[in-house]
Length: 164
Image (cartoon, rainbow, N blue to C red):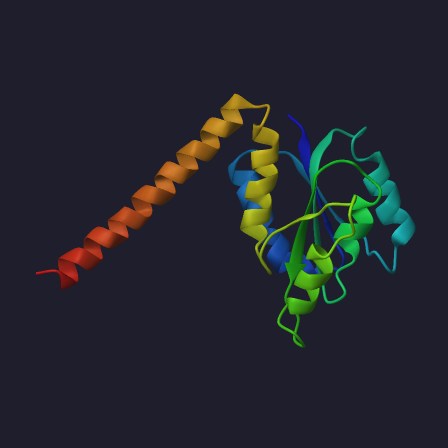
């Protein structure tokens, strides 16, 4: 199975990254986590991105806040799918990171999930791997069924409480 790369611009992003790690772990997906900044360690970020395919990665999650150039810098140096995960910050609640991540020039795409959406970033990465892995696709289907049942269970409780 291909592994997922997670690159965060700062270790302060770890609480958001942890959500992605938890999902990948629950699906038994191999992954690596690194701190590479688009601005402070651009050479290392470039090397990681450029070598990711030969190191058996299937997708990369790039996590950054504020200027959030990391996803674009990673995508510029690989043709693997890159998932941008913008992180909230005190000044603009993550809007700055969202716009920096989603506004990529033509030819350098970055899939972007919600601000602080670590779980969805991991799920999207898993969906990418599941394109060629039927077992993984079935695990995703099972999760969807379990999520549906959880919501329907909550609905039943609400109906019992209010619909008399």
